[in-house]
Image (cartoon, rainbow, N blue to C red; front, top):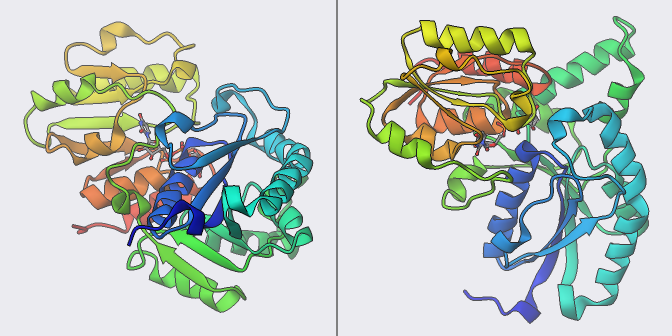
Length: 350
Ligand code: UDX
C-alpha cells in the first residue's frame, strides 16, 4: 500500500553519534518508513549522517554545541553527559515545533531513542510523548551489565561515578526494541522479559532486513573488492576494529608483523585516526591490502573471505554470524567482551 505523505504519522528517532549506533537506528527508520510512518531524525552534530543519501527522511541537527571530530579521539564518558545536558532545550523546541505543525511532519506517534541519548525520556515525558528504546548492543551484554550493577549496588566492588551516570540512567520507555537474533539470545531475552516491566520486541538482524542500504558515515573504499575478487575461496583474513577502537603503537606494529608473519592473505582496515602510528609498510608485503574504511558487509559476504579478526562490536558480530564467517576475537571494551564469549559459543553455526 502506498501511503500519501499527508496521511503519515511521524516517528522521531534520536541516535547517538557513533557509527555502531547510527547504523541500526537508520535501518529501523527504513523499516518504519516502509510501514507508512514519516521519519524525523534528530541527529548529533558530532558525526552526522549524510542527509543527501536519505531524501525520504527529515534531518534535524540537535544543536548541542559540540564540534564535529573523529569520535575515536573523544572520551565517551565525557561527551555523552555533555551532549545530553546541552541537547535538552533544542530537542524540546524541535518537538514543540513539530507538534505545532503536524501538516509538515505528521502527528508524532512516538520517539525512538538510543540509550546514550537519555535526555529523550525527560523531554518526551514533559511533553507527554511516548518513547521506545532501541537497544543496539547484545541482550547478553545487557544481562551481564545489569548483574554487574547489582553487584556494585551491593558494594562488592567500586566503579567510577562517570560510568555509572551513563550505564545506570533511568529510562521510562513504553517498550524496548532489540536488534538481535532471537534464537541466539533466547536465554538473555527471557531474563529481560521477566525483569523489565515493558514489552520487549526483537527485530533483526536489521542489516539483513535492510540489506541494500548503505549507512556508512565514512566513504567506503570499494577497491578492495576487486582485490578480493582475485583471491581463492576462504583465503583472506579480514581485519577491522570498527569505528572507535584505536590500538596503541605497540599493538599496532605487533599486529602488522603478526599478519605478515602469518603468511596469510589479509585485508586490513586502518582508519586515518590509527595512522598516527607509522605503519611498517614492509610488513604489508604483497599479501596484504589496506584500506581506510571497507564496504564491510560486502567483504564478509565474499566467498574469498574465510575469517574476521574483529573487536566484536554488535553490528560486526551480527554481520559475521549471518555470513557464517568465523571470528578471531579481539574485544577492547564494553559489550565487546561479552559478544566475544557469545561468538565463541557459536561453533557449528550456519
Ligand atoms: C561502537 C563501539 O565500539 C561499541 O562498543 C558500541 O557498542 C557501538 O559503537 P563500532 O566500532 O562502530 O561500535 O562497531 P560495530 O558495532 O561493529 O559497527 C561498525 C559498523 O561499521 C558495522 O555495521 C560495519 O559493517 C561498518 N564498517 C566497519 C564498515 O562499513 N566499514 C569498515 O571498514 C568497518
